[in-house]
Image (tube, rainbow, N blue to C red; front, side):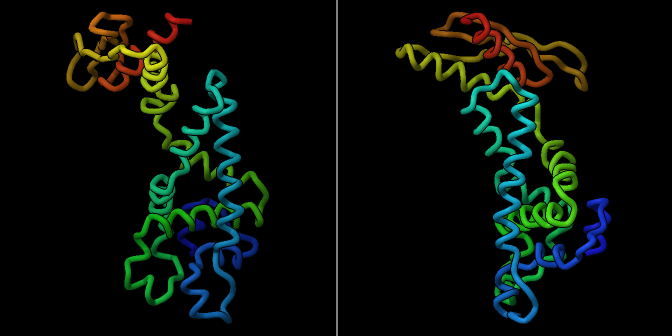
Length: 222
């Protein structure tokens, strides 16, 4: 657990909170005299995580409607994302698991790891207030948020939804060129509607270029 505190850059005043955050229900059930499991902390941590990410999206992406922010928040706090965070913090090795979960590979199970991250955030909050869990969320979750894939709320999806409202149209993306050396290429993509170009986008990857083409198409319709 000391290693976890080192990774966090934070020393718990009440280390019982850290122990509880790492205690799975299977361990608590087998050792009833050794304290509670992390389920209640997980409940609180889920709300803290959701709030901090929602605040980040609200402040940093003022152009996004509520539905897009909801989707982005879900992507950022999903089980897989939190499991990656747990592995970076080394939580798996410190989890207190029951014998069955231990044998069943519980230390590598995404659901258990994700729950432990949420519980850890709650433990930090109870020990220090909001500043420490917020710092960890920014350093380990928001920092991994890919602007290239998500920052503009998936303009391709927005454009597709707009096209579908009219019905009977086909939206497509065509790569029309690339420039630069292998380590610094730029791609140009054409967004097409029924085979006719409606906008172009440039990006460091084909995916980014497609998003930028879709964004240009959306802006041209406003």
